[in-house]
Image 1: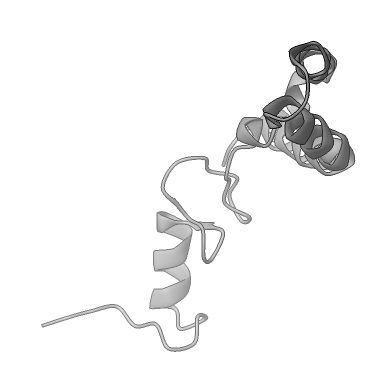
Image 2: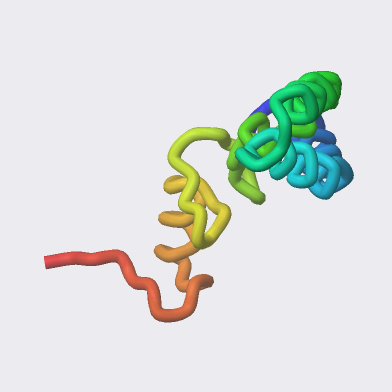
Length: 101
């Protein structure tokens, strides 16, 4: 089980990403628009840099919903490989069985 502080920090980051998503996309569109003058594009880049770091989507870590584990997480299930195997072995995930031969 991961530390609760790191799990909570990740939740705060997710909330902040949602909060600043509109502003961030608007500023990025302005900064990448080739038709605008360079001064406006530069101002947009400066405003983008002033936004909180944790509002960037790349700062959010994919974590297991059950254990909070940060590594080996399947995006489709939002579970770590260990939690996924335990649930599959106990038959709690429909259609998934542990292979044996």
